[in-house]
Figure 1: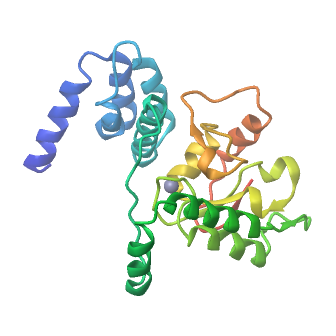
Figure 2 (figure 1 turned 180 degrees about the vertical axis):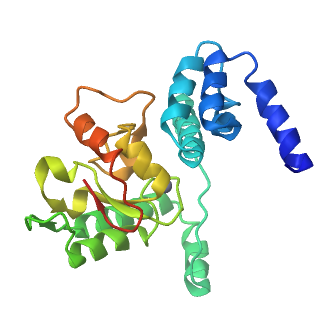
Length: 235
Ligand SMILES: [Zn+2]
């Protein structure tokens, strides 16, 4: 063990000192497994975070903590506050946008652009009797995010195509409800922690607790047992 990792372990140890439920998780899964929740945990939320740390890998937990933090910030944001956007575009286009950006109706123009893109999308839906996603549908879905995870604030590469309605329940590959997701967001989705996942990704809301009465819950329990890692379909 290097000096840094000893210091790190001591820091985590101190962080969970007052939280017996987290200590138990650390004993079962290792100290690192509880590290992502150290900045969030309180006496009131200890059981909640212990359950999350037990059911998620460290990477998934880190992602979940970040998403939940953002979610709370969206909720508490007051008024129509403006935010900065950062894009990488070709220099010639950047110059044109720099000119357009000064227009008084720039936001309305952007809204027109958004409406045009949304109106153009006519998602393909295929029920081919197989759980394998047709190549054309796969391409359509991956193009929508440029191969990145569909979760709005996530830029990781997609590792699977997620049937947001659960393939097992409907047996259809519907491009509108298939989303490319990174491993962490696929796990979070199958833990039932993304509300509105069948709708537009901009409306996705990260939840604190899953709805155990939802039909998806049973499918998701099954999914925990059978994992895929390659860009493939999940039930
Ligand atoms: Zn993601």
